[in-house]
Image 1 (cartoon, rainbow, N blue to C red):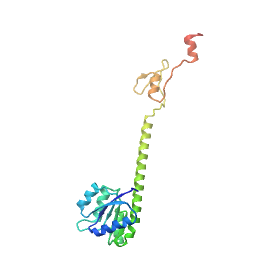
Image 2 (spheres, rainbow, N blue to C red):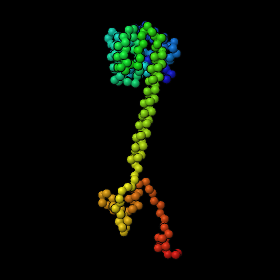
Image 3 (cartoon, rainbow, N blue to C red):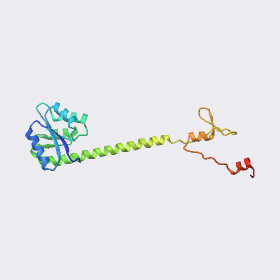
Image 4 (tube, one colour):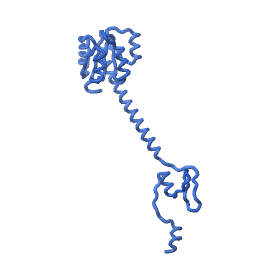
Length: 205
């Protein structure tokens, strides 16, 4: 977990936001926080403040937590979102979780806030690490596929001249055997003279 967590609080009652911050301080969470209460300021701080976590009331005078969650899910799906509300029924609580919220905490039970925040941040970090591992895995697979594509192999029947030993390629051109094998495999050549050719060329010298 990061040493200091940036928390964006969507709340129209300053005293309620202060109670949340007090509870987080009491729980030993190191954080910096910004409070917003309108859609315009919420959008601005999502970009400028770049929060690691969002705590949001369900209803505000000109905005709603549900609308805020929809924005975050569309634009910043990796930012965890916790509802902190005065009243939230079971059906609505389930609906918020289905829509992507990480948790919900009732304002009259703020003792649940710190455990909820710690768990949510831990899960978010695990998701980031898993995503990074998946990206590394995809990168490795791509590199291996590229390396495999560069491996050249010879297979099948090769048309070869019975006299000069040139090989005919698939375009109908005759190539020196050495050049053809070099271009179609990973083989390299070193040159020497076999005993039979040595005797034929130089006799018993």
